[in-house]
Image (cartoon, rainbow over all chains, first blue to last red):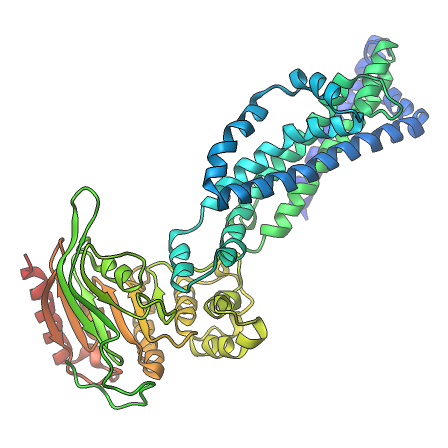
Length: 261
Length: 261
């Protein structure tokens, strides 16, 4: 019980204390809201703009989770193709690296020109940022098969499909999940970056566009309100993926069965 | 050859040796010779121990018989080399799939041969009972002790009723008490189907305790230095470990091991 309080209570108390200090500092120094709004003012702005901010949040969530889902599918499928056809890996690996090392802000304007639908362009940008950790981790995982187990499967005459399904895929799972945790955060970063480049144009806009829009009008509290929602989204993704990893690997993998932090 | 104890042999005698190597040479790239003129035979109902200094090519002999490696010169015959999935291998490490339950690990060889969980369940449970893991079918390997993991590994090896059994220092990592218990148990499990067995070890007492015949190898490149018939009932009677004949034979084998150039 004491440990539970210490684990959940201490971070919560720290956050509360920081928020309180922020509130007191703003009030005591009489900092204007367009420079630094107090937490209470941000909360009020969130409440007043709830319907429109919720619509934007929903848009950003769709792009982020859409890109993450596509990154999973793409990363895993490409990794499986690489594992089965080493020639394909040699041919396409440089392309994947080029996509990974090119800053997304630099290619997003081009993508927005070439892809007619803004939503599709945003998805593509977020996908480019998010898919590489999953691809590279899964490729390593598919190769990291215990040599004795590989011999055992050979001894019993396992087919290539049995090898992939019963040996290589389970061996790769911890690596895939480690990549997924990184990609989860990156898909949000990719979505927000692409929206920033796309600007406030379009009928449907996400939280990044709202931040841009609010900054043009010097509505600082609104910028913070959108930022709070983005932070919440990031924390939510992090928590979800950690829970997923724990649930999937808990019974057998050292990374999850040992007492964690 | 040792007098074979009368017992219910699974196949009729008079068949050629199940495991045979004749004048086998193995050279690795770079010119290192692992085996030079190695000859050995083991028929059904034979339990042969292969004893030698570390690096003498003992494990290479097993890999040849398992069809995992080809000789540079000479002939190797075994069910595995003939393309039959009729050979079982027990590694020095338990080599269990960490993501699968004990039941699923023991089921694996039958599963690879196309048997469904329901079809295999009877046989798998029979083996789990035999090795004393009846209550651990649902456990993951990480939850078992070293001795229990090795029991699961041996259950997996015996689940197909193999014609040949290859064991590569399976008990080397276990403590002495666990090892002695497993020696007695292994012989009683072995007695049921009497597969042609080659048991690699560097422990003289273990070789004499388990086998009908002890083959001593020279240091690399490996050849047969000496052979000893263990003329004692099989499975060994209680107290065999403290018998004067056991100690005399252990001394002879140890001397041969020291003499081998």
